[in-house]
Length: 315
Image (cartoon, rainbow, N blue to C red; front, top):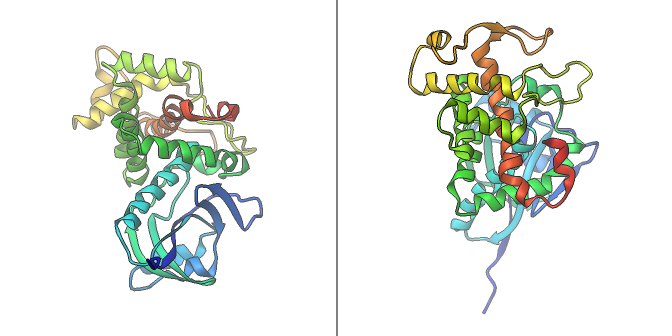
C-alpha cells in the first residue's frame, strides 16, 4: 500500500524579552525549539489577516517558540490538536518565568527553506505579565529548565485530574486578560484550584505552608536596577483573598477597608520599588498573584515530575 504523503508542519508564535545567548535556534525537546526571526516565519504574514499594527509587531519580534512535526499532507483533526499541544508547551515557559507573547498562533506547512504555507491561525489575545516581569529576560537559566517544564506541563494537561489543569488554564486566561483586576481574580482562581481552601484563613495557611510565610512574593530577578519589593507571602495572602472576594461578588473595593475581621485598604497608593510609579494596592496584589500562582504550580503541581534538583533554584 502506498504511503500517504507527509508534510512538515510548524506551529509557532512570537515571544518578547527572550535572551537566546546568541544562538540561532535552541532545542527544547519533543519538537519544540526557540528560533530567532527568519524569512520563513515572517512569510506567513498577510495584511489581509493581520492589522497594520500586528503586521509591524510581528516583523519586530526577535524570538519565536516553534513546534515542528510531520503530518499527513491531507489536513486532519490531529493538526488542530497540535495547537492545544503547542499552547501547553507555551504555558510551561510562562510557569517558569512569565513573558510577553504575540498572541496569534500560526500553523503552516513547510514549502521551501525561506517560505511557509499558512494553513490556519489561532487568534489568542497577547499575554502580558506586567511591569515586574520586564526586569529580567527569559535567559539561559530559564531556557535550561524549559525542556523538563514542557514535558511536565504536557503530562498534566494530558492527564485526567481537572484541578491541576484548571490551575494552568487560569494562569493562561489571566495572562491573556486586558484588565489587571480580572487577571488577578483568575490567578487566585488558579490558586484555589490547587488549594480548595475554606475561607480566607485556610487560604493563607495553605499558601504559607506551600511557599513559606516569609518568602518574598516578587521574584528576585537578579537585576542590577531593581531589587525585589519587600512584600511577603504571609503579608499579602489574606489581602489577596479579600480582593478576590470583592471582585468575584461585584462589591465596591472600598468596603474591604471596613471589614470587621480582616480590614484591608485595597485602594491605598503603593509602589513596587521607589523608582516605579505608585499604583493602587489592588493592582499590586493582582500582579503578585501571578507570581504566587506560578510558584505554586511549580511546587505543588509539577515538582512530582521533575527529574533533577535544579527546580529548587526557581522555587
